[in-house]
Length: 539
Image (cartoon, helix red, strand yellow):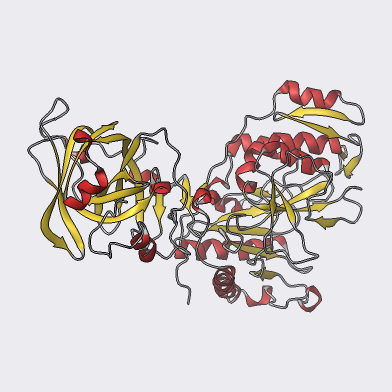
């Protein structure tokens, strides 16, 4: 078995050095337990890695791991140039095509792109593991950028406890004089630069999970909106029937039942209207719901009747519905949650009588680690809308001072909520404590408007800046979710500038009007999905 190093004890298993050097509760890299399937060919990868300093990680599959060298100036096709290559610890095969961000202050912290990849073979049929131990390895690369015969040679020098090698290209038909890796700064997988990946990573790694599950896609596949024919098929149904939508067949019932009473001058909103809206908004809502347990607030008898929380996915739910079994659930607690990983699942929830959709602020792969910090500006009986706007504007100023991206939305009822995306790592206790400091700092500016009492009756009609929603299985209503009130108002993202719009109201948009707004503004909450922020210190 290839070691990928020489200083550790010869009996030590591959990857042990790698595992020791990383805190796998914090660093999103795979722990490396499951090999990547292949067709018998050896693979290689070169990753452009901006950590403490820029370098290229040159990795060859050898006996089930990635033997690795850090090449500060990158490989070259110029046979007259020798590149320093620091022999580092083996990496697991799951790391082969990792492209994303490793958290700061962790081993290897920085951004990574797949600069080149392909297959390789040893030159003259030498055994790679033996060749590495002996200090000389000839390789033939079949990559997208690197092709031809390369040679790795160990020198007598060390950098700390790591060996210094030389990497160079042999004289062959693939050699190119003056060829420089930095002239080709993009990923061969995504076409993006390191800066672009850092600003908007597609993947995260979570090494506290099995390696096969360590790669988490941050962006879900979003379907096209329903066609006119699909919507017409819903309109053509009688009181009940089967509706083909997003590739699923849903049995829909009580379609003409009034679920939301009418606003003045409008028609009441029926279940058919709700299902139509759920289908139309699902492609926009999906990124905000996917990968998260969903708490449903059901009003099967309509918004005028008392509603209730429904969390357990019912046994009669169709087998295709995505779901999550909570491993930490105690007896008597919710065991299985709906997870809206596909658009049809949201339509199913609406047909099930869910008038409100409340996703968890953590993902199912790491339920104890939030991806948002939540601020709930909850008005009291005596709080005017203008007073609530004053509190929201103070939050706007606070987040500007903290240099944080924060995203406001009206609740569809009386309040305003603010979501702050954060890189996964802090616990709920951490985010709750941080949110409390911010909230109390804001509240101190207008103390006559704010109460910190827990119970509503103890607040004297004042507003509450509720930071306590930052806890596992505590939720705020999802963007674009309806609310059980006349006209079917919707919780709608807004811009910070709209706080100064005299026409703004918390229930301004309904399921009949918000789609027009979306066509004009796009999803103003899209940035919430870019969880790339760390929380600054608040005094």
